[in-house]
Image (cartoon, rainbow, N blue to C red):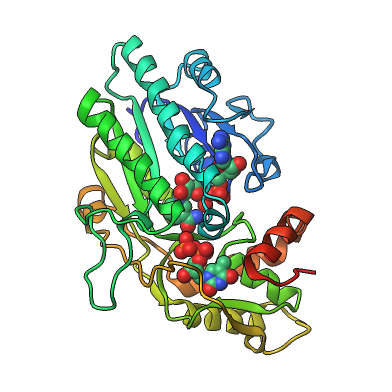
Length: 364
Ligand code: NAD
Ligand code: TYD
């Protein structure tokens, strides 16, 4: 967002701000709006990492709160004490494969947690006499729309919901609640549904960081099924810029789809990544990296294709993604090469146990 002299400073609570997209958003907001008060509320699950925010911890305008979005008294207290006007809600269980292994946590955080935040904010907003600039941004996924066939048009904001995994079903439930709070109570909720993000601070379980790390450690690169599934790839910093515009200029009650305009088959993405790793990663023990590619058992209920029509946010808010997938992957690889102290500790015993349960093979 370009700086504007009339802009009113905000007091924003960012849930899930120690996770992947949330932390990129916290950095974005802190850099662009240093006058704003930022509260991060995060329960530090396996996916949350306080070290990601260490550069900000000493700033006067920044506060980290270790807590759960399902904790209603805590949320009530924070909204009042910090005089919050903006909620940017990222906190979630976010990994499809984990939702297949254990869906309960997904219902708890994604549905009950979102409901808790919405209820708390509703009461607070009513007591504050419904100020016009208050916003509740609910960050969601394109996976709520289900799966596309090769020739289907991309998802638009009016595509009916048809979630297929416990993860996407729980996100769909939370989207419906956020929408209902606008229609029923007039609460200024806005929903965004975005495609697959990638970039710095991405937890190793997700496709791109998993492949980068496995190449560096000379481990097999597990491609599910036939590798022909298609995803749209959105560089996380482009996404943060979109969310910034939505908070400042979006219309309450609306949904905005956010996509990278980068539809790629998984196998093509992995080949591109391998080629760039061969070029950028220096003396890899196994070269070419693509010799590590292994096709493995498919994910149950694996959605075939996601694609986003982002024309609404482009026309209404002037947002366009800046990065091509090749540029974004190059930057991401360089970040993982330079920040090994960030990701190496994440390959913990817990991660290894998850890996074994999910892939049926040992990580070590
Ligand atoms: P992530 O898993 O990297 O981070 C989630 C964060 O939420 C972690 O810091 C975790 O500690 C925190 N958290 C989890 N449960 C909590 C609870 N009960 N209370 C407080 N904090 C809790 O997720 P992400 O990839 O950064 O995704 C952020 C949001 O964006 C999610 O809502 C997700 O559904 C959505 N999204 C992600 C993608 C993607 O490609 N990563 C795509 C579309 C939408
Ligand atoms: P992922 O990063 O888990 O995101 P999502 O399932 O939310 O789209 O996976 C992206 C794609 O990559 C998806 O089609 C599943 C596939 N995939 C693999 O082929 N192998 C893997 O090890 C992982 C984690 C994902």
